[in-house]
Image (cartoon, rainbow, N blue to C red; front, side):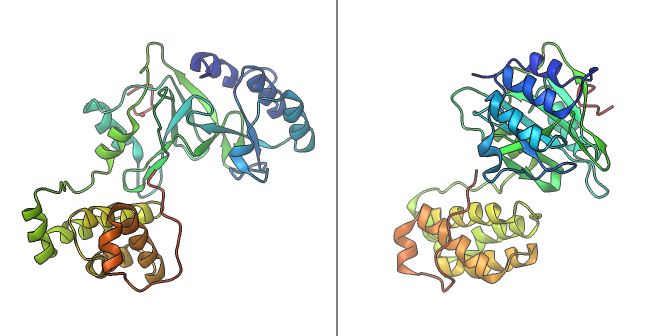
Amino acid sequence: MSPNLYHLARLLAPGSDRSLGRVAGDLASAGVPVFPCLPGQKRPLTARGFHDASTDLAQIEQWWTRWPEANLGLPTGAVSGVVVVDVDVREHVDGRESMRRALDAGRVGMPVFTVVSPSGGRHGYYPATPGVVQRSWQAARAGVDFRGDGGYIVIPPSRTPAGSYRLVTVRQGAAAGIDSDALRDFLDPRPALQPGTAADRGVAQNEPGMVVSRLAGWVAGLGEGERNRGLFWAACRAAEYDIAPATAVDVLGAAAGEAGLGPREIAATVRSAYRTTHPTAFTASRPAGPAEASPVRVPVGAGWGLV
């Protein structure tokens, strides 16, 4: 059952007893699953990471008795009922500007509450949308990540050498939820390609540059953390247009290489995309490459502290 985010905010607010173990126990008692991360870091301490998150008080006590300074991790998505928009603030990218644009465009509402990370970033907390898969994603060029299904976030009062995670804003009447796919598409738009008639696809087959040049330009600009799934997406679009796999490897591969991917990784990703989207075409023309690889999973204002 999804937690009440206002109650969650109260549990994360500064108080007299802010020991990590005490907060972990309070969260578990409220039905919020948590797990330990390395003291001062974000990496999970347990073997299965966020998959080990628990509300079992005995387990929580065992973990924080063994690791009293362990940071607190919260799995995001359906498992906890919480999703988080993570806005990075770094030297070369400031996600706050991206979120200003998204707010002005009406692509996102205000979060229920906001946490400031030790690096100066912002974490906006929203309720997960019941019955909807909201996969985690990254839009590195926009400086924004989304933590949903398959992800986790480090929460207050966890700390790093740079400082502590701090609850800074709670907003009454905030957004009831978030359309994470719409936000991703706004922040990191894909080339607009819609397969048309068989004749249209035939033109693309005879002159593949008309299609793949747009895809390649987009792939070349992908940043670390989004290159694999971006190439996978582009290769799927090429397959939908009946572009020969060898052409996709040559043209998209050159762009992906510019973005930083290696030849073996490129071939495996394109192969996975074609087998997923258009297996018949791929069987007819199979690019040389390494052994089979698993498909790449293609999986916020004053309240944000933006002003």
